[in-house]
Length: 116
Image (cartoon, rainbow, N blue to C red):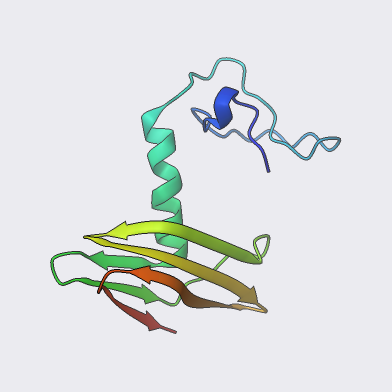
């Protein structure tokens, strides 16, 4: 889904309007400001909560505890996720009511613990 904001910026807010069925895009909220820093940060917080990422840079580890993608998202990839000095690529895939996770690339010595 592409946002209707210039330069692919996230909108200030998401409102309760239905999507435009012709383009399958969110309806633009005409009085919203762009860009909004807190709106951008909320995307990362949403990902962290949905995937249940628990980073611990001082201990050099990442715990992923029972991740769960919503039914509308079957697959999600995170590339170049930085924790401490390590870069990770992670792939999540929903099958039925569970979500699997795998590390597809790791640059550094971070310990990744996947708890399902």
